Amino acid sequence: QSVLTQPPSVSGAPGQRVTISCTGSSSNIGAGYDVHWYQQLPGTAPKLLIYGNSNRPSGVPDRFSGSKSGTSASLAITGLQAEDEADYYCQSYDSSLSGLFGGGTKLTVL
Amino acid sequence: EVQLVESGGGLVQPGGSLRLSCAASGFTFSSYWMHWVRQAPGKGLVWVSRINSDGSSTSYADSVKGRFTISRDNAKNTLYLQMNSLRAEDTAVYYCARGGFYGDYEVWGQGTLVTVSS
Image 1: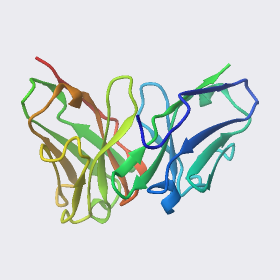
Image 2: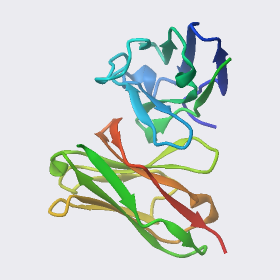
Image 3: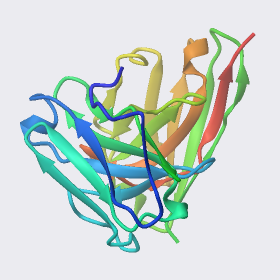
């Protein structure tokens, strides 16, 4: 069980908005460490989607957005597309466990 | 083009050793922290180890501490992971990634599969 908790799965129809939560604790997200998000398409390496809680790397569509509050963070995807079907991971740092990933969330586009 | 290419994976018996390599190109390798992240079949991502830009500082996940050693050769633009006393639970795809001290893995390799089995 990961220290960063994500829902195992979420789903939405094309065009809809979905959110993925990432819940931590006072030793990681709540301690002020940034949260980053990754997208992993089937059979491929992860790709950085959001860094520093809410920043998008060049080339990432603005349909993807991130936020952080207290001991939690969220990834929102608007205008859902079939190509968004993938696994999504949050990542932060923990003062006792160093690098830290969430357990991952499988997004299904209905 | 910024690129990381892992190599060295394969099948190894429990208790055996393996050394993974990660060749970097397209950026100033010696300026960046580097990390190893692994993913067991059908499972999530797990951070394994990190090393600072000149190799003087390293950290490990508890699950590999004392068995794995991360190192780098900045002259060869290559990152390494020496894995000893391998266990079945070390079976995974191993990715090298460029990132800061706290993560933010902005560049990833394609991964190399390590299978520990008799």
